[in-house]
Image (tube, rainbow, N blue to C red):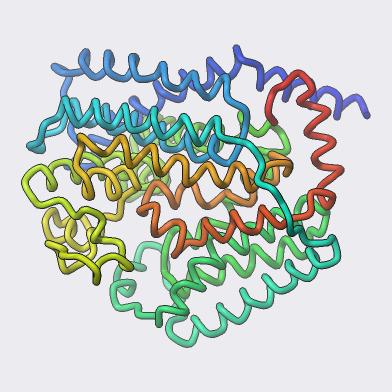
Length: 447
């Protein structure tokens, strides 16, 4: 090992130490709250008052103890997802203190905190590998990657016949409401953009096939003029950022930094420049600090308000269940929220949909626990794979899970498909990468 490589390896190990991780997760907790104070100056539905600041600080400081679970847990898919959900729930608890919406705020806050803890127990600590009676050979695995590229190209070509419009990010909402795709195309678009291509990118990148990895990024970018979503526009840059972070940092530190660093940049830039929200710094703050993080937390505030005075769904919003049971709502929950609050189509995470909307705040922790066991299947299916590969191939899913129900993430966005892909991947393909990770983790640290 060369001297620079040894220095990088030593630095990575130090940053992954318990002391460094403790400092990082606590700084992240503080950053989340500071960011929301600034968000409140731009978003009327997120409130803040100096008079109640001391209550919010006590609540946030108490709840931040939960973040220490990420210091002792090893890296896994659940670790990656769990830290994003921790950020979201912490944000809600902060917003809950200042909320001007009418609902039982103390019980709602306790329910959310308990729900997260119960969710984290399985996603962080259920890791036993699944038996693998069927595993692809290395040659068949290469064929699988080629098939993914072929399916992706066909999906893009077919979807483009329904919509392909080159417009700036500022004008996507002028056209997006009119987009209509057949169900098969809609599902394929979700699977390819959220699961198949990120999986292929991680494979090609770590196997050293950089030109094929670049092709994957181009294919991902082509989904932007088709779907007209900011998510599609920024996915290639996001995957590159994860590849760089996971090269410089151990997997646990990289997972935390993947949300900490963008938030920190957004807050520093907007505070330092004093820029308006429609400026370049303001747009970055809007995309990262507001839409990526604060909106997911705020959705819990809004769902609590709505379902405190409206009938619960008892899971009838899930498309396969709706024809089989009585449902008090004819439209999707996102449209329901749009009509009630005029904030756009407000999709929300499993904590809001499978939790608050379906069973109410008192049973929501139980659905969170069940959801944790479902997502822990990702840990078991990916057991034995290099942490860096898991981080990169699942790079899109944490953000997806913050914004859609679990059922939608599993089926429409292909999380269940990713679990299957992890399950059949031959571990020998990444033997060198796993050996390198193991060499850095002999002390028992994940990375």
